[in-house]
Image (cartoon, rainbow, N blue to C red):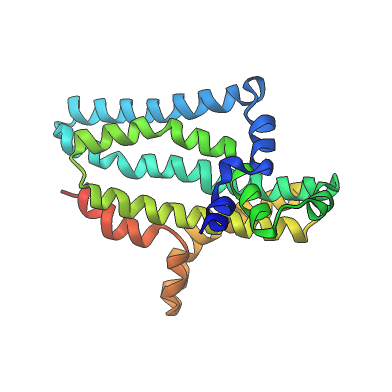
Length: 226
């Protein structure tokens, strides 16, 4: 049990600490911090005020209708940008031969995987955390059930981990970080935009469960349509 906890304790992982120091430098990350604050604040506040003051929608209904917009922004941060960053980071480490050094280190393969899984997208994780006050606003004003909130974000987290692990695999195979970055982003867009529309018509409905859309359809849409 202690060994399992030590493996999963990513905050003590040296690979994670390395990326925290390199990717969260204020001069390098300040633009992304501001972007993660300004864009969701603008979308949520403007849309909420317009719906309440101009269209006569109740505050509760207006807040609930903002949830999908905020989920889209969070998806762009973690699923799109984060996935591309993970793939590009693995490829860059391979080019710099840092991966070869990691094989010689005493870290187990599982600890190395955890370090890359949480370390490479650490900037995107911080950006996601900066959007959480808007989630709290939507939950409180919209009176959203906590069971629905936990269900949606549990599925969201599983999808993010799946995409990032796939991006690590892509990074280990490819040799150019630009191609790996673009291929990972293209795969996420295909899974979340193209396949849910086209594949069910062919009878392959199980493919849509690779995305978060089934949970949104079951938990979010019924709430926003009230």
